Image 1 (cartoon, rainbow, N blue to C red):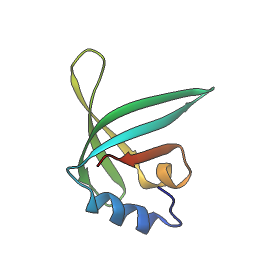
Image 2: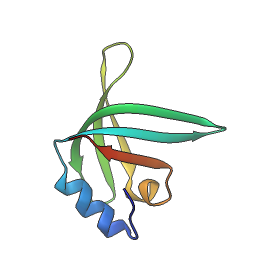
Image 3: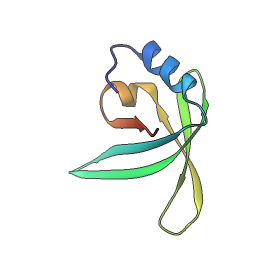
Image 4: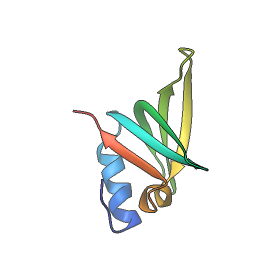
Amino acid sequence: MEFKSVNEIRSEVKKNVGKEVTLKADKGRKRIVTKSGVILDAFPSVFTIKVNNDFDAERTVSYSYSDVLTSTVRLQIKN
């Protein structure tokens, strides 16, 4: 996803609530975490994603829209 403002990101995430996504998060020091999950909800400043980890346990993680804007987090909607 390529965006120019936080409002564009927020509207795109709201539009895709309930859809599966692939998430790539830059954790620093050349560590990139790739997860797949479902967008649960979109709030005014953050959005939440339910992910399954390696141990078959579900977790809910949240990210801010500015993380997507600064490319710290990349979302790819699965079709």
